Length: 491
Image (tube, rainbow, N blue to C red; front, side, top):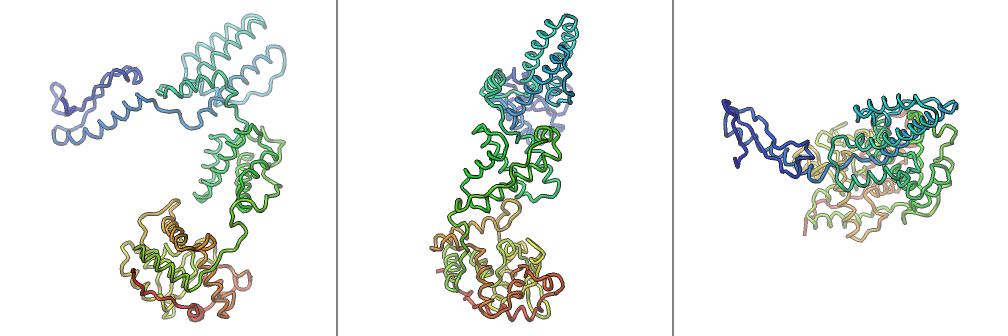
């Protein structure tokens, strides 16, 4: 049975069968063999179908050997369960001596312990009923015993029948014996961050921004735990100072904290109770100046005509024609890199007899615009349209995170720029600064220069009421940009 195929007596259907190694049988409930019908009487089909089944079984066996780790956040779940048991028992003890206990809220942690162990829970209930027949002293002792019994059920509630790795099982036992070793000093738990993420995504939050907010809160939680600090203003101040980031970035960290705080105080019942008298600790900070990025506060440099030629030629020398074409597009349009990477053959339109790029809305209302194609760029655009294999003008092998087409080519440009001897103040976005600067120096009105690159002018009359310049006016303005040769070939 080297091929693991069998037929049962009196049947024409083929089955696949695999013996389970003796060492892992206990982890699989004592099972000795896997058997599954392949639902075919043709041996040739059975030979093919068995492969995926055998692969599935081998994965199960390997997992049984090493164990399947508990889900992320299990330590927080353990602490919450211990806390729930302690609170529940404390309430019962206070009731015994005549104190009025606080209202008991439904505890999902305590419920999880009992649901995972129905037989033990039933026996525990009978035990408590009998124990309460004695006096206060015996009842107190009974509740303490119940406290220990419930805690002993926690591993089963966390792992169920799952075979977890030995190292994690030992860690679970140690934490159960000494939960203070992992007692959280921050309420920013894994479970809360998961709920926060789902809320933000459900409200249409951009994936990148949601990831950033969650990641910043994860970093804060680790910082608070690592330094045994509570979630309060002074702790956040210490955290912000420890980051050594640019002021703008520090501001984004505080805004992420405020977004989480507002969500938790509105939608998380336990958080509302814990922080009901507390002010938002992420507000009112004086952000440290001068730290972080060495480029913080410095203006980006613009490219000269010679700079653009140098960069384009360097791309061609590297055999990277798409990057060379992207540089030319940046020089003649001042468009954002993602806007250029999303240009397709359908983006090339004719308006008033003039070939133009139709840029859809991206970052703002002003980003939706129609821009004439510079006369020196026409032949390049025609070639890109002709050579396009997927309608896009700039070929990209695959999208980057969050569906950004420009991710990989942006990295390639950064490497090219550095190798060509340009500073970090020269970025692809510098082409936007370059185009606006060259247009202004060519006496193009500022509002027209901004309109061409997709910036709001700041004028209510122009931004709200004006339909903008004509295509002919735009072409006349863009034609003032100095031309760069586009026929240079790789050396």
